[in-house]
Length: 198
Ligand code: ITT
Image 1: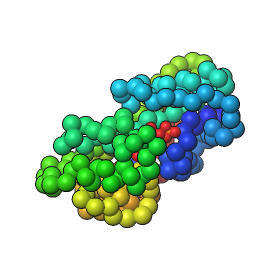
Image 2: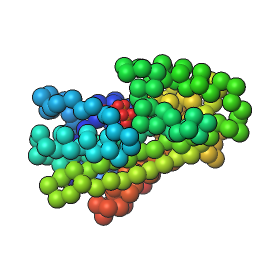
Image 3: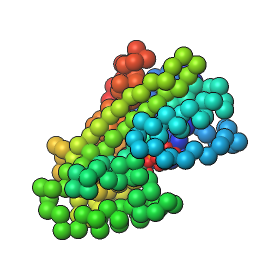
Image 4: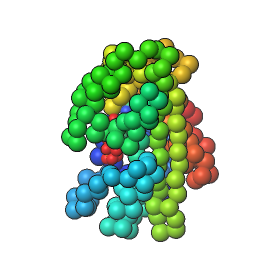
């Protein structure tokens, strides 16, 4: 089965490909479709943004599409950065700038109040349907970055049950417990496939 994977985030592409390895699902990248319109991610929810990304690409190509919107919800910040996670520091922010901003926002917040969760919402668009798959992972936010693996806020996020950040734990553990792997497990069960032995 072939889908366009409608994301330009290299960290996501790498994780999604590895989470689907061992299945018969094949992804084409957006690079094969250079003339697509830009999608403005201005929805109030992960679902709205995932839908916008998937539907725009599907309407222009007619090829089944999978898109994801994801982000980090920090309890002490009322759920921010949430849908603005990629643009927390400013519209063209790098991962490093977003991490710096989060560290500043949480300065002085004690360890027991630094709870957060990652959210992942996939939207699949085809001629038959639009369908959503969601996943979450709870944890807490460190005061300074640790580790080099992964992308985004991984160096600041320690998942519950561990004492190291996602960036220290590396892809094998992240892919077992992450928001993205939870959502993809649901997608694979929907397709009637067991996961790839993670
Ligand atoms: P696309 O829209 O092209 O998919 P994007 O980076 O803009 O790429 P999102 O709008 O979904 O993707 O933003 C998600 C942001 O949330 C991402 O840039 C990270 O900052 C953060 N994030 C999501 N999942 C993450 C993860 O597994 N580890 C670390 N940070 C993550």
